[in-house]
Structures are given as structure tokens and as C-alpha cells.
Image (cartoon, rainbow, N blue to C red; front, side, top):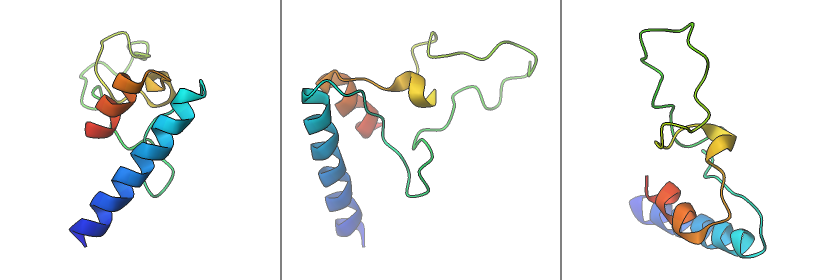
Length: 79
């Protein structure tokens, strides 16, 4: 099973890099079509604070993480 997951991830990364080469911003999604990376702010003590849209530099901001930069896409998929 792990081999199939690894192959699927490799194939997804290849498709994402192909799309990025064409200038499309991409992010990894889970099988349920939700962003694959959880928000780094999910446990923040102040829920009234305005939402971070990636300014913190960490992954997990959904569409705000999308990028057409191949190095960034690889980093997103590695995370």
C-alpha cells in the first residue's frame, strides 16, 4: 500500500510541476479535495485575530500557498 501511495504522490507531483511550467499556480490536495496541509494556526489562542494568508511563511494556508514556482511546488509536496 505504501508503494501505491508513493507512486500516486510522485505522479501528482509530476502533474503539478507540469501545470506550474505552464504558469498555473498549484497546491497539493487530499483525496477529499481539501488542502493537504493543515493550518499552522489551528491551535492559536486568539480566534479573533485576522486570518493569516501566508504572511508567516509557513505552509498550510490553502489557496494562499499556491505557486507556479517549481521549487515551491516541490517544497509543498514534500511537506
